[in-house]
Image (cartoon, rainbow, N blue to C red; front, side):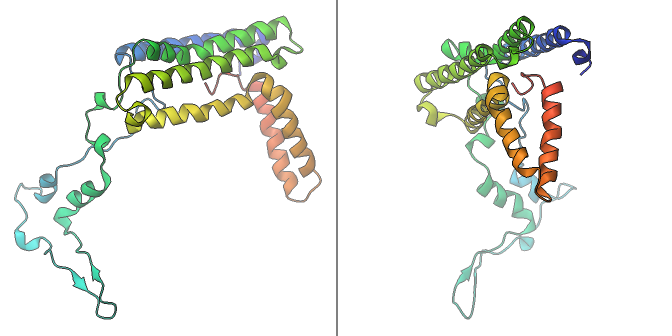
Length: 256
């Protein structure tokens, strides 16, 4: 926001500098994790299971007596004749939940949740990391060269989208060829990250030439239809307010 007030050239210099710093940090993480793909968020939540014996023991180390544990007997309802399953006792709740909630990924060591990438897979990851820098530099070039229509130029948008889509296809090909079982053999964390990156392609509808030439016109048509209608005109006003902030202070690589 501060760079925006100093002119277009300063704004784009700051954007490119920020993306270079972010890319450097991501490449450093790629190195520190021995070429494992980056995640978003970088530290996914994970609940470590507690052994049932730890729950069965009391705070002073004395094990709960057998009489306090639930008996393995079922209760039959008199009218329907259906049997209700036995509820676990308080000392067996942890084992009961673990047996029904945990999956294979929940008990794997952290390093086994993400496989290392090499060759084509590592190239795809580097492309994915560098795509914001390349896109920001292309936008800087065209916006400074043609201040009036630079944001409407399709060259930066096509370049950025091609890099991201190409990185995704290379990564999928590498996973299918090198991983046992192909894409079906991925861990849950890898499948979730691949799915998130796929949905991330939708953000290109809010960037660059596509936003300026297509999305913005569609937003204007929607807000125009809502302007003279009771209550709905409030929704149109909110959309127009956010559109102003998006146009003035949003930088194209903020969601990359």
